[in-house]
Length: 558
Image (tube, rainbow, N blue to C red):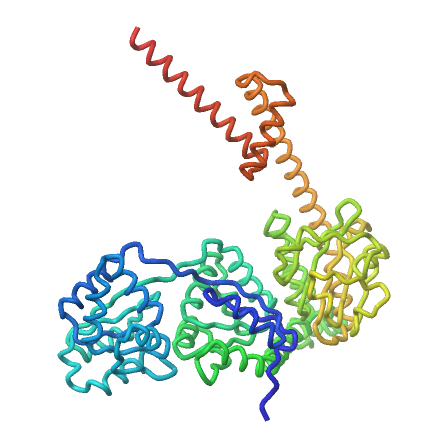
């Protein structure tokens, strides 16, 4: 019997660009929490020279076969022909030459233009089906054909090589291409989320998404971490072409849909995701349990046994585990001075040694606990969400300096408080412990689970120990961050005062009027007061430089 199509609350990452809204709706329709981050953007080629050359040669009767790989490519070529005033001649020439198409989309576009299609590559529409369909249609005569191939985004060397081996001449016709998104931060956050286990399912709808994902990961020096993260989540590929790209990057997808279409991909992913995620989570938990097992044995059995040399090598390794643990966590938090990097490393370490679906770190600043780090991406609430002492389970833990472990129905606990913009607040289980420095609370670590989870005594003690160990580092990083912000504000104030003085001198206005002038510019141009001040100061430096140059010129003439 087929499993019901439901993600059942799983977090689903898609890298879809052109149809991102449709993908978001589909994931939500099947009960998933959508996390859609475009991995690419479509841009016109800097020059259409090759496309224009193809149009002119086609009109001149140069080609014996034209292969279209995408519907967008068909329409783009017509637009280029229109821009050159050759659309009528182009379509007439296209209707006279044999045409092959890769799948239904270019077929639809060609039918709209009343262009007959001689051969159609069937599903799964890879380059192999393209070559086979052309070879089946034209047979041995293909060896004398001059073939043009409309490319899509990135070149397909396998297709070009296979055609070149069978045809007399092959010309590639690039029409449009894919570039990385202009803003890479969402893609970086997606990579970090995969690495830290912040997503459960990843959907790939084109090989270009795979290329760009790993390209950004390489820039972050995290390609190996990304590869490991993808092996720990359910990975779905829309079809063989995308699968080939994943395999080239060391990832074997868990499945392909029965048809290489987005709707089939999401539906069948919803059917299989629950089972795949549980299988991978079980393997991960077994691995983590093996890693943590050494923490439960801290000392050899007896001094006599040590003297007699009767311990087994495995027991010696177990005795060293607490030292390894301390070395690991201290080296992680000591490797960076940045406030958010320190917190990020703590999140990474905690989620490595204790399995969980979510990890939050709150830091006490004045009288509020501010959410400062998260395993899952929450750009809208990190550094924004504040909790009062005593408010919710997190506030209770900070106020009482005691851990709280709830195995199920966490939202029914009388101390619980719901925050609508945090999906994790609907999770079943929670483990929360204080972060302490010199007996003073400096923050709280929260671990949460989608399903019921009974935290062991060792896990509670382990997280509490981490809270003790990292407290001083968190407080140091917080103070340094606070000092840096104060220093920045002081420098900004100095710049504004200097700029205000220049306006008073040049505009012959009072101090208050000069300040209001800067405020108006700030609002109208949507720039900060510091940016306005820096522009005024730069103008003053340029003016002084010009005066010095003029004086030198005048002196030399004298």
